[in-house]
Image (cartoon, rainbow, N blue to C red):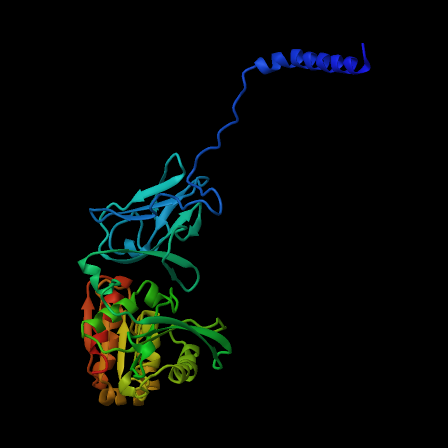
Length: 408
């Protein structure tokens, strides 16, 4: 037998032996790999978004919330805004929220027990003790610290603050400026009315301040001030105006008081207002300038708007006053003493003093002492006592009532 034939024979023999040894192994049934458990979690960067709706307004007005959290043990939805208008199983302002239930895919769900009135609301999820804005959200509202998601329930009752395609829209800009008064970079939001960007007209200005838990973003993100102004202007109910929304908080320092805050006043009067006058087309007269604010912003207005009639002839105070607590009488007396000349001038020069508060507001006790100051100095004012409490539901409506009264 040739050497080549021998090599071929050996190869065939080896192959046959390999098949004989492997045959029993190949005959054994094969166990398929364990299938990866299916969850709601996204599969990667290019994966499509989850199919569930994080916020769904049902036909009966109730609202269903959903979040994907397959590994979580306890998930709730929180919204002090909703808790102010319907029972959600927890008192307003507390973090407990509505308990959610997890399905087999890891989606947690809960539906409000009652319909939610038409309006705009902030909310967040609490996932195992951690606050989480809606991971699938597209609208947000910044607080003093932290962020909430928002959603809107449409309907006639909230139509005044809804974005409408058929209405001309203004622009909301974010500005940053250096405040020499407090030695820090500052931020504000500025609404300019429809037509501002391609025109040359100068406009009156409203300085509009938020409350203690919020930021300069709040009057637009949750307050919908831009939509309110767009709709009022389109209906011919309000004059086109610029609205400047400052950041109401200033850097912490020993002895600082967020309600009686000279740092804010100095920044507003010495830094922000000159910046706005230099960078926007404004009418710079007291008759074309207003200041208003809610809660803490109302306090800023009492102390920096009402006390400067040489600058502001239109003033709005929402859900705030003077004279609350054990030293209330002393607080009123100190305010009058420090601002006696300005209050006397208010009686002659103010075009409008607007004062609004809800019957259930925890600051309702400040109404009588504050109005007594107005009466003592002969300052005429429009008083709006509404239903409800210390809520954005009221503050949007106060702005809607206040803005048409400006710059007449």
